[in-house]
Image (cartoon, rainbow, N blue to C red):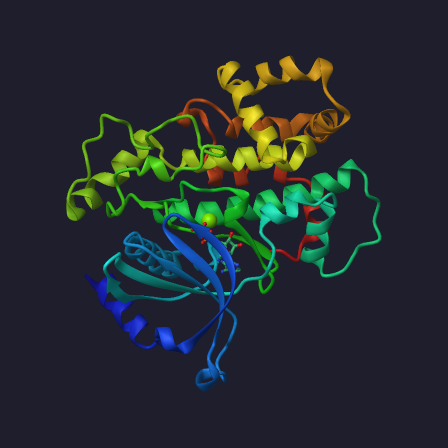
Length: 352
Ligand code: ADP
Ligand code: MG
C-alpha cells in the first residue's frame, strides 16, 4: 500500500505533459505496437530540459508505462530515464498511450556493432577521446569486457527487481551520453513476475534472433496468470523454480558472441549461427568443434579473443548460451565471474 502512495505522490510532483507540449522530430523506430520519435518541447515550455524520445503506443502502452514507472523507482540506472506516460486519446483504433524518456544519445549497440571500427568506436565514446594505446586483441577484449559488465549490471538491476526484459538485443541497448554507459531500453515485452503484470508470455513479441530456445519463460505447467496478490506471494517461488531471468542471459550471451566474432554481427550470419547451434543441440563446444577447423580469419579471431587468459571469456560465454535455462549463469553470478577480475577493466574506469 505504502509503495503505491509513494509512487502517487512522487508522480504528483513531477512535471506533467500533454500532446501539445511537443514538437515531433525524426522518427527513430516503428514496430507493430508503436512509433518512436525524437521530440522537443514547444516554445512555451522551452525553458525546461528539451531533448526527449516519445513513443506513441497501442493498448500495450499501458503495461509499458507501468513497467517504466516501476523500473524508474526500483533500478533507475538500468534503463533509459523515463519521464512520463499518459493516455492521449481513445480513437476508433483504440487507446493511444504516449511514453516519454530523456533522449540518451544517438548510439545503439546495434549501430555501434555494425561499424568496422567496433569495438574502438565504443572506447572513443566511453572515454570521450581517442586513446593512444595499442590496438591489439587484448585491447579489444578490455573494451568488450567493459561493455559486458555494463550490460550485466543493468540486467542484474532489472532481475533483482523481478523484471524479465525478454527482448534484449543490440537494438534495445542505448549508449547514454550523460552517464557514459550502456542502458537497456524498450520494456514493451517485459514481464514483472512479482506482481503478475504481463504474466502470460506474449511469445509473438519475442525476437527469434536473440530468443532462448525455450518457448515459454515460465514452465508450461505453471497455471495462467493468478490474481495480483496471489502472484505476489507465489512468484518468488515460481522465479526459483523456473528461473525466467535466464531467458535474458541467453540473449546477452548472443550479444557477447557477436561482439567477439566480427563475422557473426550481421543478421543473416546470426540466423545461420542459430541454425548451426540448433543442429549441435545448443552445445557451443560442439559448434566450435564443427566450425573451427575451417574457420575464416574473422572467426578465428573471435576464438582467439575468448581464449585469452586461459579461456576465461569462452568459459563465461558457454555458461550463458546453454539449452537448459537452469544451467545458465545468473546476471549477478556473471558479474562475479573471473572474466571481470582482470586489471584491464580499470583502464576504462570512467564507467559506473
Ligand atoms: P520499438 O518498440 O520501436 O522497438 P524502442 O523503445 O526500442 O521502440 O525505441 C526505438 C528506437 O528509438 C531505439 O532503437 C533507439 O534507437 C531509439 N530510442 C529509444 N529510446 C531512446 C532514448 N531514451 N534515447 C535515445 N534514443 C532512444
Ligand atoms: Mg526496440
